[in-house]
Image: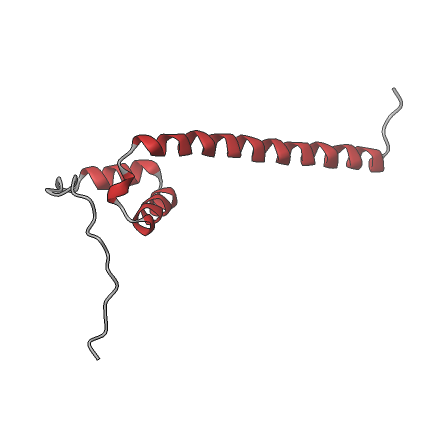
Length: 94
């Protein structure tokens, strides 16, 4: 096999790089899908959408182990099974 020129080698490397990026995205999407499939098994209805998003965002930011340690250190909630209060918009008395 003849030796590749620098241009051919660069083109080959770029093609492999594109393929690797596609593979990373495909794998990331599959992993996120597996995690999303866990959500229906959890009682997330006790959280607002904002609370749910904030919890996940902060957990990802600081890392799972640190988040678990911090949450386990908290006292048990006495109303953890109670659904959130119905939020009614404030009305003007004017």
